[in-house]
Image (cartoon, rainbow, N blue to C red; front, side, top):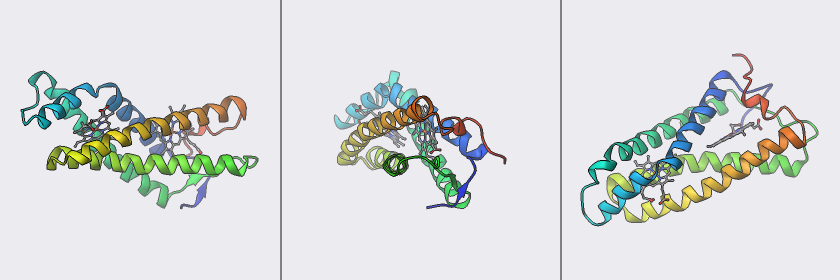
Length: 167
Ligand code: HEM
Ligand code: HEM
């Protein structure tokens, strides 16, 4: 997909961790959007006490979409570091596949959420709910992979998402 560089840039590292915080917020504070969505399904207005967090879900999700587009742009124009030279092919494939899946999900989630919310398409709300479960599973595998790289394989893979290569 992209050329290989020695490490991630400052912008790539910053974008990774900002998106992590935004996605964590989406999962930790989802009660409000669910309450508002249930109200919508009953043709009622969103409950007033959930309004602020409902709009924060929409704002954070939309921001994730913009930041993911920026990440894809950087990945294509700048590239990404190679896997460690001694990494088994199967692990390389698994890691690339999970990254690709997370990219796809973080584009599809805001789109399905927006189609449900703005156009009132109920099926899109169902797809949104399904996709967030798949995302949780992908993130669990991703974090497990990062920890295995660091503590079991003792590679530099985890640290390169903390220490950017200049610029
Ligand atoms: C990365 C972006 C997003 C993530 C990770 C995310 C995550 C979530 C989660 C965890 C729920 C609760 C699902 C449940 O347990 O029932 C939810 C519900 C919902 N979200 Fe999002 N969301 C994102 C973006 C958006 C955006 C941009 C919108 C609207 C413009 C939106 C609209 C909705 C709606 C309408 C629901 C209620 C329907 C449902 O449960 O599927 N979401 N979202
Ligand atoms: C919401 C949670 C997360 C999401 C959505 C996410 C997403 C991603 C994506 C899409 C990439 C690929 C970047 C690229 O090469 O273009 C990546 C790389 C990486 N992530 Fe995450 N990540 C999350 C959480 C974490 C956490 C908690 C850790 C640490 C424990 C972590 C460690 C890493 C590392 C080390 C890489 C670089 C892998 C490599 O160089 O091959 N991520 N992440």
